[in-house]
Each structure stands twice: as structure tokens, then as C-alpha cells.
Image (cartoon, rainbow, N blue to C red; front, side):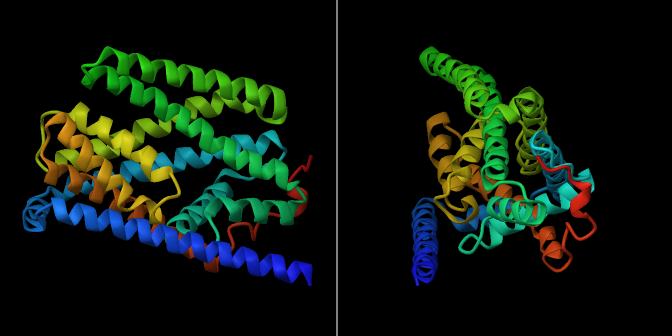
Length: 301
């Protein structure tokens, strides 16, 4: 009886979280609609260079491949030796769940549940692997953000704050892992470096999108906004970051004196890129990515 009550409560919490996300997303879109002329937005999009938009999608896909490799390092730290191709399929299914099924099960939770049940790895270890991968990814983003901040910000205090925050966050993460998550310590610096590589290709995707709109000036400012928007999109506040990302582009474009319509369009195109790239994961709902991996191929801890 108690288990049934817990499950019902859990479902209610999921529905409430989904409702909250939908509400915040709708409010964000409503706010943007009051600030933007959609006719001007559509005209800008109509004249976009579609080949460059395709490059944007390709660069983003490459960044996700490297992100999957980064996560597999942490899996191997706890003796889950998934072949890279299998890990990539599982990762892509997770991307699909994160974006298209936000109210049922997240991609991260799916990976934790599957690996724990199929290979007998404790929940604590699989959960830690997935969460630490997110953390090291954000650390790489923080350093790139500090670099672009030094290029575009006039306030030295802001610049110094970004640099110090990135360094302190990295050191704090390292010592926390060293003290409480020692299994993952060998993977910390390799995943940190992979995080920088992932961000390099994510930036290349953003550059391609920006250039597709005919912009050839203030590129560093747009990339800085893109990086801040990427952090906002990671927060579990809206559906797939929709709305939150565009608001960051809108408000920071005002701060830098950039074209607000174009900035919002960049944010929207980034979202479309994410949607297109993640949609391929639906295939692995019907074809289990772990179907060819036997339990005895994994050396459990």
C-alpha cells in the first residue's frame, strides 16, 4: 500500500513539474511576443543562408558525439565498458527523452535506470557518473564564457568575476570529487578537456547560425549571449530551454546594443537545431541501444 502511495505521489509531482514548465514556457513566449515584430523576424529568416544553417546542425551533432565520449569516460571509471557506438546510441536516446518527453522520464534518469538494472551497478554510481558529466561540461562552458567575457565586457569587475568563478568552480569540483567521488577522479581532467572540445563545436554551430543571417560584426557579443543562454537552457525551468534561451538573447542584446529581432531569431534557430539533432533518438525507442551488449561484457564494480 505504501509503495502505491509513493508511486501516485511521484506521478503527481511529475505532472506538477510538467505543468510548471509549460506555464513558464508560455509566459516566456508571451513576453517575447510583446517585444518582437514577427513579420520582421520572418523576413530575416526568409533571407537566411540555408547552407550555413546546415553547417550549424552538423557542428552541433559533432559536439554531441564528443559529449557522449566524455560521458563514457565516467562510465568506464565505474567499470561500465560500453562500446562507443552503443554509448552514442544510448546518449542520443537520452537527448530525445530530455527534449520531447520532459514530463515522463528525463534522458539522464533513463540512462541511470537502464545501466543500473541491466548491469547491476549501484544507483549511486550511475547517477554520479551522469551528474558529474553535466558538471564538467558546465565547467568547460564557464571557461569559454570567461574568455568571451574578456573580449566583449567593458567592466573589469565582471571580467574578473567570470574568470575567478570558472577557476574556483573547477577547483571546488576537483576536490569534491577527490573527497567523495574518488572512483571518478581519474576521469576528471580528461572529461574537462573533452568539455572544452564540445564547447568548441557548439560555438562553431552558433557561429554558422549567426553568419547565416548575414551578420559579420559583433560576432563575439552574439557568442557571449549564446553561452549565457546555453546556461539558462540547461536549467529545468522550461520545455527544452524554449523561451528561457530567447529571453536571454532578447535582454542581453539590449545590453550590448544589438538588433533585438535578430538576436531572438538566433536563439530560436539554436533551439530548432537542438530539436532536429535530438529527434533522431526516437529510433532507439524501438531499437534498444543496449540489445547487442551482454551483461558479461561489462566488468561490474
